[in-house]
Length: 181
Image (tube, rainbow, N blue to C red; front, side, top):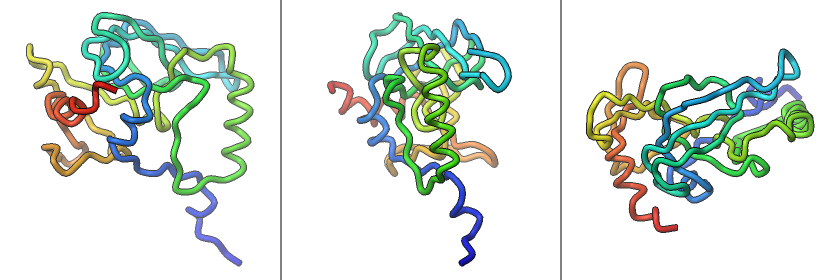
């Protein structure tokens, strides 16, 4: 029996925004103010960041600080829309997976347990989206939306050749009815 190549791969599943929000412990607009890599080379455990909360949709209050990780692609001084869960219960959904990925994930969890921040970026790092802060009104800031997280049809999205752009105000409209959780 011959399987197509994708059948042997670990493939993340698209997740509706409502599902991600419901599963999140924290949904925050933060500015990354501190970050460090955790371990060298193949013993790397990702990164640990500190962010100042500009707007809270769920969880911590505005102006507080949050520690999170482990994905190491974030930049200091930049704003991000974050969907976070407690590090010991990472949120990942799959179309398919393989034993190699699951074994590596278990080994990583064991090796890195003592280094992890209290909160983890959800869904393979897709729960961290760059926000462009080019306006004095936060509602007009633009989120570079990750397509692995699907938006309700009611959300106004601007599509470019390479990105889906949505304002913080549009996201706030969708999340506001649920922010009392």
